[in-house]
Image (cartoon, rainbow, N blue to C red; front, side, top):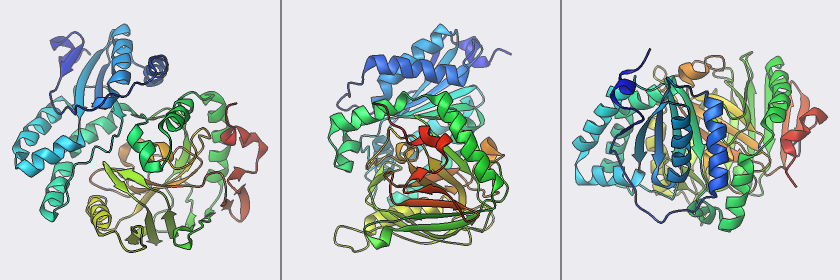
Length: 414
């Protein structure tokens, strides 16, 4: 059936939500065009499709290429640019009602699109909110957007993360080197990776217990986790929902994960730079968390931001901060410190999803329910110091899978 939006407009509907003028990034247009083709083909865009393009301003180069591909398919798109900084400005100025009206418009179109592409190019687009009342208002803002994000998750969606100089600087890496690394991660032998990941997924799915150990030079950040796998399906994900891929993941048996997750590198979370993080997990829920400053003391500001976020990730019934996902990243082109968790979760390492999957991944869902889905917390292993066992049998040693059929998962180009 032709949608109301398709009848109204031949190709586009622009929602003037937020724009963020800043120094443009010159992405390789040939790579952007190739990436756009891969995304549109992966999403299965057809003439009757209506595609929501929800993007940060620096994602315009890729967004433009995707628009062209959508038009070539005879489909329709909806433009919604966004900016964390503008959200901060609205909250500080007390003009929250302006944003409420925009959110209402978004809710009106939530049933009007069939596909969604969320394009992020994070330039430390900090909302700048630090006062308790501002952080409280931000929490209300995020809750108010729940129906919009829920509509995205109910559609056929793809999330894309582009590299930025700010991410490279946060990681202490040269921009050219960081940019080249991420661009190479976009172009992988996805079919071969999918075949290898299926073998890994089946091995996990057949097991009953998983133990993980990742050593850190600073003992505070050593990761040691154990959990029951619980017989849930293990997802084999390349580029079905995230770009670049790839990973396998599952919902651990609820209430069985115990141990510590240590993240000893900076990462970007909800537009904020978090220098590090230690999570203590007991019976499947986070019971303690700490962020340290350079002097080894608690970073009060970062700790407060994590607290506000966790308040949005508490289970609807238990009120606990529960683990909904365990994932293993397999994109070997991604390495070193990568502050963006959506990119770093695909690198060789592991991640925990705090919060629930919801209906989008019912086969992996372990029953955790939260107002806004889940957020991934990533521990990269850099290809070393990582051991995983399933029912006492080693499947990964020093960051490498022991099954030779999985070698593509730690093979780099060139």
